[in-house]
Image (cartoon, rainbow, N blue to C red; front, top):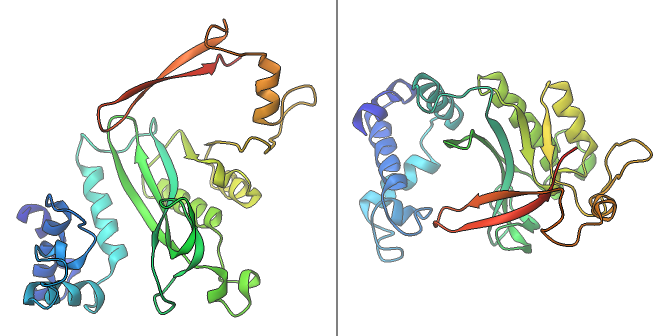
Length: 267
């Protein structure tokens, strides 16, 4: 840990910042429950330990101390590229997703009533758009940026500074590719398939993409071919796994469970 943390030393301005960075890393990597809370990161009781010196010191480091998170992340990615095992290559993919956390009140930056996928409902919270690089063997986060709801801008969605989640994600994917994390394609779920801006931004960046479609969402195809997932399913006339054109995909989950999914054989 010390050898790794020392490689970020020049990005901080004081010994207190360097100590705070080490304490933050240890808190993130330690096997503790709810390590997104300041008290748990510092190894203290969730409520009773909020006033402890270690908790207050870590709170100051994260919220008040003048250091640049983007520079820290850039250095982290540089170190990943230097190591042979996790080093990126063009056979991997960049996965786009967003993650929301519930947050009450209106004073916190980027907070607003919006869809929170983690909860499966619309609620008050903060949503962060993220990119992850993976080749099926290793995976690690690349970049992240918070989504700012339209009501934070005086002109709403028409404000020049406003960016939708697809716009933010396309910019992050292009940024990752530019700094050396090449990929075969950018992968996203169906929430991004409805944005023409997303498609155009990836094409301009020279990035291929694979995106899930909503059942009634169409895509470009020849006039005599299916345009939506529902039309494709109807064209197959496929009712069970015994269909001769089917092939299996083995899904392996982190908890050790496995599932077999059936899919039509591509032409």
